[in-house]
Image (cartoon, rainbow, N blue to C red):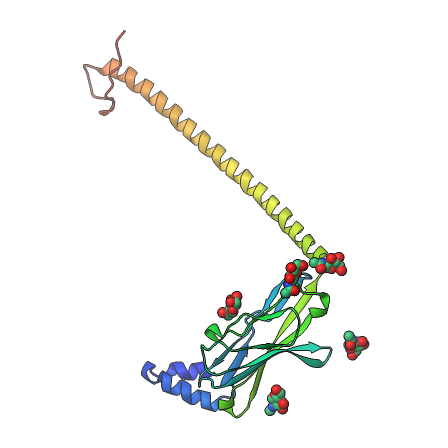
Length: 224
Ligand SMILES: *[C@@H]1O[C@H](CO)[C@@H](O)[C@H](O)[C@H]1NC(C)=O
Ligand SMILES: *[C@@H]1O[C@H](CO)[C@@H](O)[C@H](O)[C@H]1NC(C)=O
Ligand SMILES: *[C@@H]1O[C@H](CO)[C@@H](O)[C@H](O)[C@H]1NC(C)=O
Ligand SMILES: *[C@@H]1O[C@H](CO)[C@@H](O)[C@H](O)[C@H]1NC(C)=O
Ligand SMILES: *[C@@H]1O[C@H](CO)[C@@H](O)[C@H](O)[C@H]1NC(C)=O
């Protein structure tokens, strides 16, 4: 609805109106964990929990933290304060096997979770608070699902079988096409040979007469 309003204004006005909309909107700061807010990963693997923030009014001393929902109680995973956009913050980490990888590059505050166990599965909340907005809280939730290796192996096996079948079909079709092409070429060659024979004999017969033969059949056959 708001986008509609923006686009109905002229382009010169857009910047001004975005600022105005920001002030009206409750979502001045927005935390995002991406279009797919969950991940299924095998135990023992290393995963990235994505999160970025955006703010149309800009940030100053943005406080952010990652929380883990442990059966209803929220545990702090890490937190920091970002002075301004583009500044790499010093992040305090409270959970093992966690590193901050976003580095605040392009508002990226993603974290890496190393060697995950089944206990790591669950909800991870990316939280942000921008003092420019009088301490309003914003958050986004990412779900980590830890699965056993077996299930994934099954999946890969299915994929392998599927691609093998697909490959076989493709190969068969390719072979058939090739066969058809070969037949086509052979027929053409045969036709040409026949034509040549006809032409040469034609030349033989109509040498002094009508030009019934092709003009470009240069190699005149030897007379015996
Ligand atoms: C994943 O879990 C299975 C079953 O509990 C276990 O056998 C396997 O060793 C685990 N893999 C890793 C990499 O921890
Ligand atoms: C999680 O909560 C459920 C019910 O609320 C409880 O039965 C279970 O023991 C809890 N698990 C842990 C690890 O606290
Ligand atoms: C993850 O596991 C590997 C191999 O088991 C180990 O070398 C590495 O140090 C672990 N990383 C972390 C951050 O625990
Ligand atoms: C955030 O940073 C990580 C680590 O550099 C990178 O893998 C990821 O693609 C970045 N995400 C976005 C949305 O830029
Ligand atoms: C915002 O989050 C903090 C915890 O970080 C909490 O103490 C505070 O009550 C929250 N404020 C609102 C308005 O939800």
